[in-house]
Amino acid sequence: MIRSLALAFTVAFAAPVLAAPPSDLDTTVAAIMAQSGTPGVAIGIVENGKVSWARGYGVKRLGGGERVGADTLFEIGSVSKAFTTAGLALLVDEGKIGWDDKVIDHLPEFQMADPWVTREFTIRDLLVHRSGLGLGAGDLTFVPRSTITRAEVVRAVRYLKPQTSFRSAFAYDNLLYVVAGVLIERVSGQSWEDFTRTRLLRPAGMAASTTDEASRWRNPDRAQPHQRLGPPAVGLGDLVMVDERRGLSPNAYPAGGIMSSVNDMNRWIALQLAQGRLPGGKPLWSIAQAREMWTPVTQLPIAPKTGALAVTVPQFSGYGLAWTISDYRGTRIVAHSGGTLGFLTRLVLMPGRDIGFIIVQNSMDSEVMGALQYVLLDHYLGLPPTDWGKALHDATADGNRQALAVLAAAQNPARQAPPSLPLAGYAGDYKDAWYGGMTITADAAGTLAIDFRRTPGMVGTLQPYSADTFLTRWRDPTIEPAYVTFVTTPTGRIERVRMVASSPLADFSYDYRDLDFVPVDK
Image (spheres, rainbow, N blue to C red):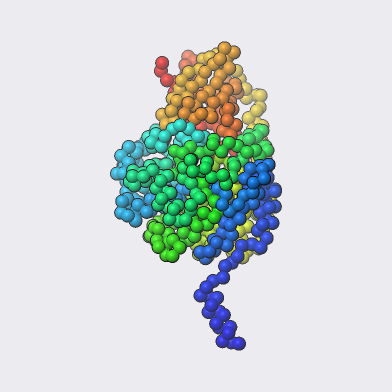
């Protein structure tokens, strides 16, 4: 008997048994989805190098009958950034670049606003959100979809004004990941799309995942995006399906353009947990580069939370090369989120336990992804269950109530004053250095229309709000409305046009605040 017990312990330690997903996971997912109304979710889990879960829930489109499966494609948004850094890691392993190479040594046309910063800017700086640019700076070059090219995005960087000094603070951006994609193209001689597909997706066995638009539209097994379009603001109201072809511009795909399924992403998770080693042991990238990608570079601010969410506040948090490295209740977590029009993704790795999981959904209700993340983390850490569905739902409702109060205050008639110029006086062509041209026209009735010429959906009317500030609601209802303010001289000449999103719920990618339009001389 004693000998048999010893043998059992030896076997147990030599080959760890899978922890196994929660036995009630299906029921939990269904309850959280029902609470939010999210149409479709898919979850993938990898434990000790083996897939332990790959399952879809709900439907691909609201009101439809096609079920989400483990092979259904979802946009994974900024989780794509890790593919761009992995591509760079391959080039580092080949000796073609170094993480601390100066960007201008590979892309001479790259410039920041400050010449010294341009000279010092490294490939690592492209990836860790410490450039000095503001949150989401330049995102309007690809959110919403525009006709601006990837090369034009690179040239736009020099015109964006820094908000902090170089390498002093964290501010999330997408723009510099586009630059990183162009750098891959320049060094490899392939487009980012082809390089990522042939050098990463194909070796990893991710055959269904796409890096380009043509491939994604050919696959009928794809989820459709859903969003709340109001009233009274985007992010509130009933959930509706939106046009999938209005999403992210292809110029930004290195920052967020991959579509994938949980079956494919489980392969990516296994590859990450194996530090770049493929099934069978062959390395796709070296352990040295795996460590580089998971090493924190930029310290992240930590915000306090109250109630049930207080336990989710990390003790440390930093950003590496397309990964957030933090802790959850003392356990190291390597993770990233993604969001595009109508989709959200959360990928979480627990390297110390050799466990990883991904959650994808075809709506922008973040409470679903957030709740399921904590359900899985608590399960694998052996913690008592918490009703995370209720906790995240309550937090979302509280945030929405605060947003409604701000929106109601903005409609206060006491703030309103008549325009200082005849409406036709605001018409004209305007140009911003990094975005490009915008036109305002007045029809015979005096109604003002605004047209962002490089962004087809950004066409709308200007409704008088107060004095020289107007409210624009775009023809495309998925685009965040904005206040448009004309800055005039005492003689009534328009000096510049500034903008800001009108809703406190607006996504940071609508960086109207960074625009500085000036009249174009006739």
